[in-house]
Image 1 (cartoon, protein in one colour):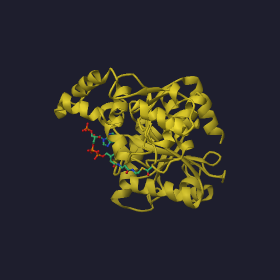
Image 2 (cartoon, protein in one colour):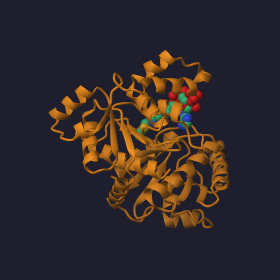
Image 3 (tube, helix red, strand yellow):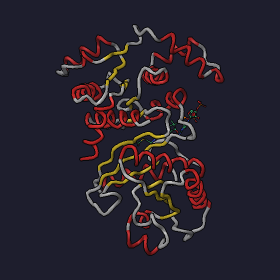
Image 4 (spheres, helix red, strand yellow):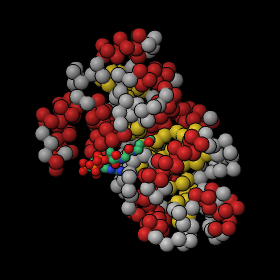
Length: 333
Ligand code: ACO
């Protein structure tokens, strides 16, 4: 896939520091070795150094010994990070001892490294559920200015080139925010438009999806999408955004022409924004399974620094790809 090769090539020029907190996961160690060999990033592993080196030897990995390993037991910055956590969570009454306890969890240590400027991005989730990866990130790294909600995009590659941009489409939110308000849905649309430009290298044509096209149905759920479309257009006047529309009106030219003849997006959308997480998550999985589309992601967007969450069923190459994507996000901040 050319896009992934381009993303990898760009990553090699950015030299970003990407932390992998799940060093006990075999796939993560293998991916770390590949990323190191291909110079996709300066990899940092978190975990017990002795165990990591023993595991990597057993796996026949030759270069893990050349990668920086951060071990809670010996790391010199634990006290500094704990003080930073206390400061950032003083409104929640966090005590230093509690902070130190949290830092024993590599998922917290990783986000504190990013917050303190000792790493540029993180890839995790091969061995942890989404919530466990995201919660520390929400609490300490937080969202970027002007955005209050983190969301997750999938790059969907279909063999049928009539859809999206030569078969490439972005779907969001498929991973994070269960029930967005109209304002949050508008932010998700804008964040996804930015991801389309920064990572996919395409000019977004954003369709705000619903079960109604341009007033064909009346319901409070439709009203939310209509409102979100208005807000998104205000938030990003330079982006092509339209809605509300049904999925067929968004991606099939003949249907778009019939149902929304005035729309510049209908029939040509390359970014699909779903009204909530249920519809987004279900849709990407169905398209992946039934249409055999390749789904890359979720790429998390809206965070102040890139932190990406893998599926626990991921392969080594999924991790390697996400390391390269994360490096690009960090380098394009
Ligand atoms: N963006 C930014 N910040 C957020 C978001 C968000 N989308 N959601 C919650 N937060 C913040 C809150 O403001 C809060 O901050 P605070 O502690 O400083 O006050 C903190 O995160 C915790 O908020 P909670 O409401 O307690 O959130 P909780 O931890 O219960 O849930 C979570 C957050 C885990 C991400 C939840 O929304 C969730 O489970 N989402 C679905 C994830 C999922 O299962 N996805 C599908 C699988 S992924 C896949 O299939 C690829």
